Amino acid sequence: MENQNSNSHNTMYLIAAILNWVTLGGTFLLNIQNPVAAIIAVIIMACWTVPMTIRIHKNQRDMTRKHTALGVCTLLFINIISGILILVADAQVKKEA
Image (spheres, rainbow, N blue to C red):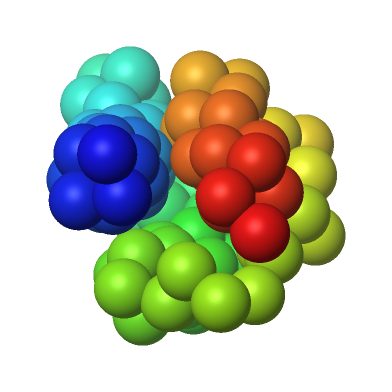
């Protein structure tokens, strides 16, 4: 049972990270008509998306601590679905402890 919870936890974090990278790429594609604006938008968005997504990758294997703040910040600043996935994975850690 614990291995199954660990696998679902890792899967949710991985999906959240992939969605964050897709969101960053989608920002560029949505603004492709004006390449200068697209590059500026991606650079600004990358300032918080890249560090938070790297933190998601690092926290994927850490099931000893809760990462609620990371889930809420992802929910507010990057992608709603990614934030919800992190919060759901975080709730599974709570049930195990």
